Image (cartoon, rainbow, N blue to C red; front, side):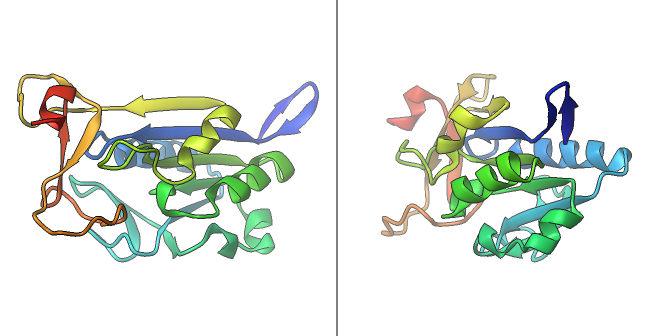
Amino acid sequence: METFTNGPVGKLELIIGNMFSGKSSELIRRINREKSINKKILVVNFISDNRYSNNSVATHDNLKVNCLKLAKLNDITENMIQQYDSFFIDEGQFFSDLFDIVLKLVDVHHKHVVVSGLDGDYLRNPFGDIVKLIPICDTLDKLKAYCCKCNNGTSAPFTKRIAKNKSTSVIDIGGNEKYIPVCRYHYFQ
């Protein structure tokens, strides 16, 4: 909670981008900053995200932080809200109640909330409610990977599905066996 002359207020930070852009790594960096000043933090990840760990937020390069796995953010109890100073939410795009719960944490309970997640799906459509948080956030970091086809440092703002499955489901959790970061040119190739 930050304090200004008008009293206590919450704060919302967003970390968005495509797959392999470093969102979870940045989230873990911010978690470690909060831990360094002894803030009481709760780290939450989507229950179905078990790509690298069953009980952690984990990065593609194996950085890990223990977390609570939830299907809905509404499962964060009032007791938990009172107990913690800051809330870190990874894979925010998967939570159907993201907007309402984050708004409550920040504006009603004056909590510091950091949300990371995909802003777009592999079809380049907005993914979940995470983009609805943009107008109410204090800070926004849009991260991009490098295009894995160009291999020369070209910015890759898009995620391309490479898996050969016939699924048209937007929610198909996976790593580099299913998705790659690409530039605009290679998105259409």
